[in-house]
Image (tube, rainbow, N blue to C red; front, top):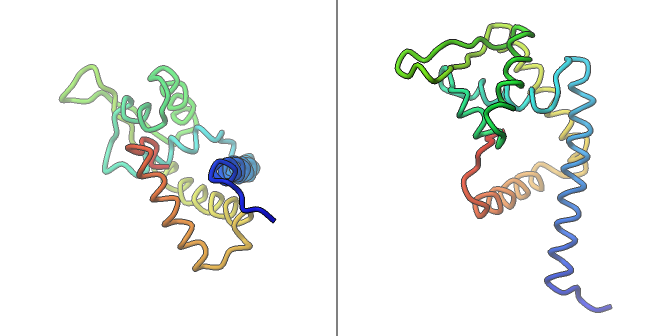
Length: 152
């Protein structure tokens, strides 16, 4: 049996990464359905939750890698659900700051658990050491892709 070329291996890795990412996303979507959030809303909520205090709308858009108008729509839906609040930045009138509400903080815990279940259903065949190694490898790859915007 011949050994696969580097191009073959790279293509297989890309295919497997896309498949695994898709499976995790499908599982996440089913975990999020009862909560009533979309994947984009969940990501935005995580970004706001991880910020050290209020975060600018422009920063949310950058971390989601979407245009500011699209971020506004996502934050609109989170605000309507009572998960975030918006207020003007006192140091820059053009900026809007977004903060989690108590309800948003509570839901964030539920979402973290749901996200963990969704990923675990895909990663269940890996041991703890395998997962640690995978994390190291993916972190190395991620670092070579440039700055991470999403910090999902």
